[in-house]
Image 1 (cartoon, rainbow, N blue to C red):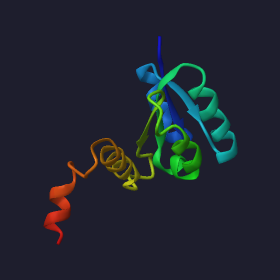
Image 2 (image 1 turned 120 degrees about the horizontal axis):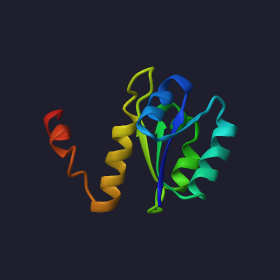
Image 3 (image 1 turned 180 degrees about the vertical axis):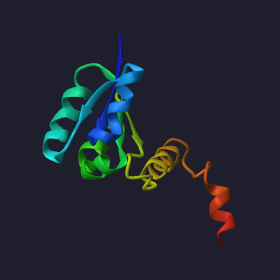
Length: 111
């Protein structure tokens, strides 16, 4: 059975424990990178990572982008939304479909 984990700063992730998700608070990027690798190799199908932590772990997150499992999903932290999660979705859709079919209308309107 696959599991779901949440990684990020303590204040952002502990609420997810009430939902039954495995919570991994991460203060420093080096330790967080090791934790991400361990989770990815031990049966976690979905790993939610706060946008701020994902930014610090970008090479490590990109390592799993082409793999089916784990799905790494960026979520905003308590400090707010940086837009990195939506950029990640946009990049994934463009990679899968070959064009920006979700946000194309926004780009057209801004011209």
